[in-house]
Image 1 (cartoon, helix red, strand yellow):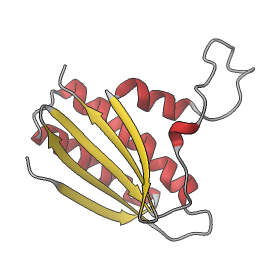
Image 2 (image 1 turned 60 degrees about the vertical axis):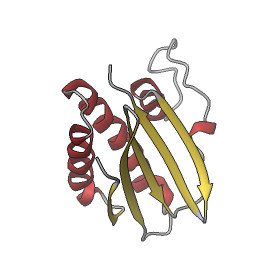
Image 3 (image 1 turned 90 degrees about the horizontal axis):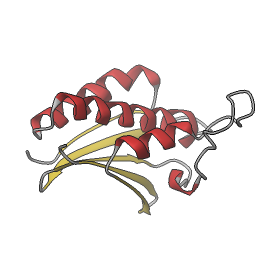
Length: 136
């Protein structure tokens, strides 16, 4: 599988195209259906976070770059929004009742659970969230 990418305006209307691209790329990389679903869920959560928080003043893009690294499938989610390392958030306390929990944080928790590796870097004015899925 060669490195492929898609770039769209960061709006909910573009979510289906982005998810279809991620799922197709994961399938092309050789992942099984269970892993493809997990990758798609993780990408959805990350991309919706970009839509919701990266561009508080409007206007901006999100790019997905998919590649294969050995046996692993890698997705980089790139935006030029405000600097924000989602991995810096503390893990949510999932032992408390829903009523007692503070809002937010579960999406990143799910991404970390679904993916084998998750990393963040800020480079050239861009947030780059990298998700890595290994075959199981």
